[in-house]
Length: 399
Image 1 (tube, rainbow, N blue to C red):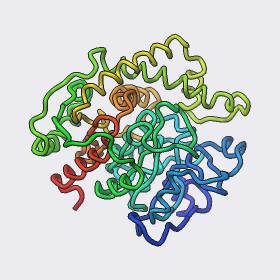
Image 2 (tube, rainbow, N blue to C red):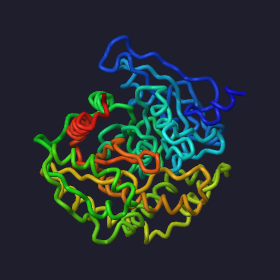
Image 3 (cartoon, helix red, strand yellow):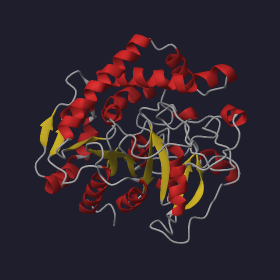
Image 4 (cartoon, rainbow, N blue to C red):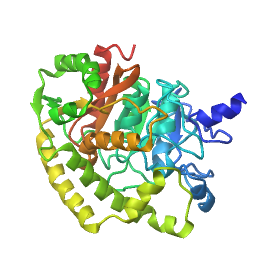
């Protein structure tokens, strides 16, 4: 019974654990990692969180290059982790494989869609874990589970051998229990920074702080003071005079069109069974008004230019990763959707502009974790990881 329960609420996909030893030497030697089950491992099926996907797609012919790079660097694979079906959700729920437990707040969702990878790291089962992020699927589980997580600059790391959802938004990402390990993985996977120089000044994004509940603002106050000691007094900025709701809507429409273009043919041909929420999101994607999607793409181009200009000199944005802690497991679908919309107005900042974002586990609200995000201009990923490591040291998080 214990084994059955651990499979239901554990982070790994049901069935025998897929394990592969890494190279005997390398920068990640001695570290164990897990991989979200949308990355291919040669000879094994990629279920993408859905039994019908697993049934209608053959085992992978090759291992995804990003996974291969980790193995070659000495890290050892310790299993494939659960994901929300076809990566289309932020709570972490999966009715087929079981919803992974949130070790930091067992009565709350772990966050999705990289739910299993976040859960495995938070439980201490692996040193780091690979996930993917389209609309917040690494950043939000990192915040909910009280661990470090990074969404790199879009296009910095290849997604060959990984299942797609919104290709012009999708990026791999990873979690770790320590900032130092997050940076070690980055040193293996990330290209050298395209722009040199120190990061700064610090910009406090008023839109995102106002969007957060008071408890989150209070929990992140002390970490912000430590960050100001590193980068100087924060300058206050408004990034979205249109409102965060407009960012969410433009992101939603552009990404939904891509989701249907990417997966619609398979859905129409197979008629897969989906769990609650996922079915409705794909139905909405199918019905997306092309004019709304076009407006979303046009807005994105302007927003990218706006953000890249603002951050070109090395400025760093800081705001709550999520405005609220993870929803309770018993939250209604309406409550979950309200949190999703409020959250994605913030995650859309980096998502629309293709920016690197690191979430640090710096606070708690009602006993549940909340994260602080640092965001830099595209191609400054390594510098951002170094800053996160410095802040983690100042806060005693890596001790």
